[in-house]
Length: 91
Image (cartoon, rainbow, N blue to C red; front, top):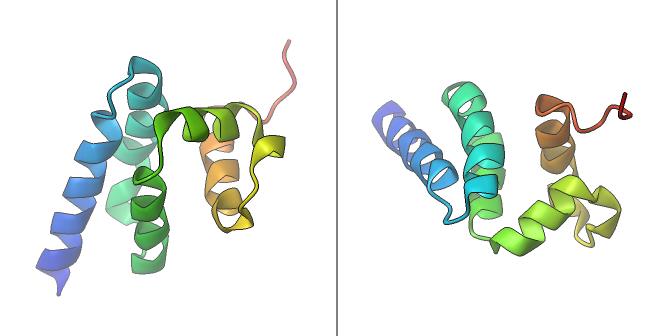
């Protein structure tokens, strides 16, 4: 069981780092590098589902969370925003 979870974590980390656009590679890849190894199964499942979505949608949701229609991903989007300090007002 643990081996399967480790494989899924590695796969999710790879997919997050190689999205196809540099911006999303950076936004999702850095987050994955820091967090994926400690994600619980339910959190990993949500992250894996997020990784199946198109880059333009994800980037828009991360940068403009008010555009997020499906609240399923809202906690993860908020976590990504906090990780990248996008939830703080500009200085």
